[in-house]
Image 1: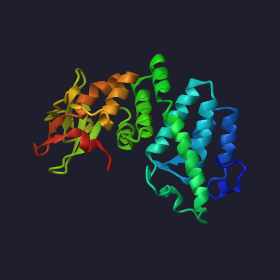
Image 2: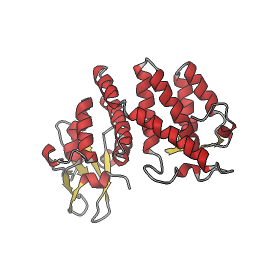
Image 3: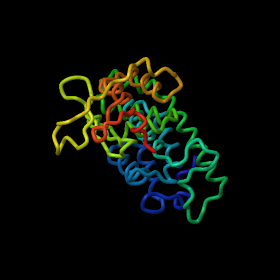
Image 4: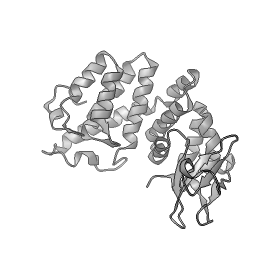
Length: 277
């Protein structure tokens, strides 16, 4: 790990310039994992406007170490979820190239130093990913709500390498509305869960402003149609069942189902259109 006293922190980038404040915030978290300090570190320095920075890679090993050393399951859960969010938003993953977030370093860092920071980061990510089963058990035993479980599932997907799935779960974190574009007419549609029964309906206009007239009912897929255990979707099914996320388990047959576009009438599969580009 990059030593907290290293002058390199002043060369690493955050959203507002050099990351010289990050080591001090990490040291404060080592003493006490307080909401005020971790929120400042996460959202003002490591992840801002859906973007991570070169300093994020250097900080994550310290967060992983905190999770490893903490006896508080809430601390482990919080670090697990937030580092999963960072990973979801990494520009380059599983590439022979070093992270793109280091490209704009000025002055540039030596490639050997970047490799050292990135290797420590990958080791930390691997450790956090191995916490999934423990986190699932804790979330179920403490009866976390479905939205909290959705963030857990997003992190789990990111650690498994299914970043597109993680992106869906984070984009639609409340599960109350989904948006997709029709590949035939390119019009957007709004897909809402039905209020009084399982099911989902697609509308050409936002029902918040236009009401729920002229919606198209979604035809759900069958659980058995997700056959490959190695597919990202199959892994999501299994994880949602393991953590007992009732909302997502109810919605997944419809999110992987079919619907006729409310604008042009053409049939489409919903899931591929949800996946971020």
